[in-house]
Length: 142
Ligand code: 9L3
Ligand code: MG
Image (cartoon, rainbow, N blue to C red; front, side, top):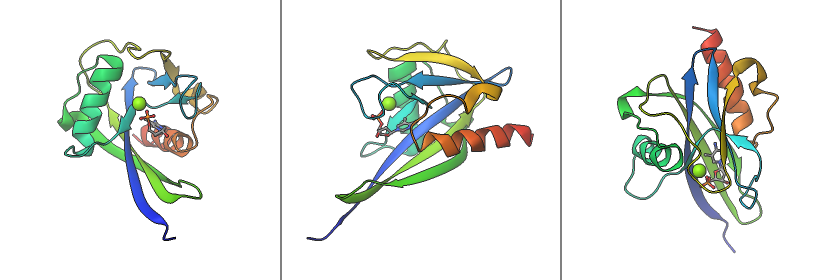
């Protein structure tokens, strides 16, 4: 059988505050990568741009309002999806401005502000690890 060539596009945001620190979200125990800490976000749906998907996801998950113009593309990471074929790409954006105080709105999730010096100590899904390293480098370079 032919392997499928589906690409799942996932977007995530680094909300960066003073410290510097970044808002991380703990995934629900019953989902893929349960209990690990990720950059908030989710899958891009049909008819969305990556930026509009991120505006929707952060509204749903955190109650935060983002402007597409305040989303700076930072880095991406890719992963093969296993024996069924296909792959996933995770695009990370950085935001320095948003409206609202981020809250964990979805069941069985938590949010935490994490100092950059402690970020790489957090247990993260595989795609988030290299993106966390890129984020740290991007701020060190400023
Ligand atoms: N994922 C990984 N890191 C992230 C995000 C937002 C998502 N920072 C992965 C977990 C799932 C897939 O992307 O395999 C879709 O995410 P969700 O819809 O389960 O949140
Ligand atoms: Mg999500």
